[in-house]
Image (cartoon, rainbow, N blue to C red):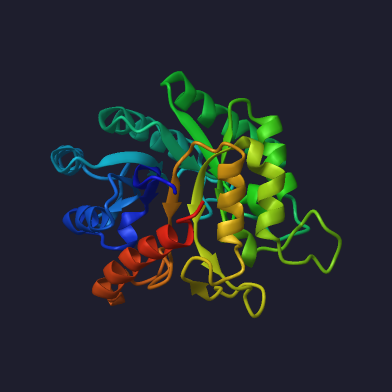
Length: 292
């Protein structure tokens, strides 16, 4: 059985209020969370006083922040955007990670351009080398997630990043392959297979995100997100294989069940439903993996 100390989650999917994030974490019996949004700001974008209060409160509650879910090079930025914005995010994140003793920061490889257009790979590699170096110089690990970014086009794209960017590690998200086409395959580009993606990149993975869903009806549509084990992400198979092979990292939930994190209008979200579904999601994942 996997110890509860190995679980974490993006608690901003339970609430943007820090007290509720702490409450959801404790209700699950966990001692860690993955920090992303507190209030209406990403943790590296918060005002200094607000961050200081949040850090003190997390210490008081005995909750570790094991991962920074940063905005760095994410799907919301194109590779030709101002690199100084990215570097400023890095420089704000580092001292905050040091304050919270957070060893890992989630980064990406900038937004995907339409397939068939110039993806500017060399510029992506150049930028990621600088990002990873700055974190490494501060004693931190930058890990790339296979989201809607260049590295998410296929397992081969993620592996190319590892090859081109010294020191880069990977975060594997079980659900993200389910709604992305495999651009390493010939047309008509099949949907990616989560287990096959995992098996190709697993030697470089230091952290796992769990979401589950079904293939979208068509390209460009949000998938139907499900509880863990109820979709096509092969969650149990991935994590069992990881544990059998000696994986020692953490497992983070990122449910998206009640609402997609990047919903256009967070004020319209039923946050009690989000809280309840987040806790239920964590419980179901632990039950799914009880014999792993």
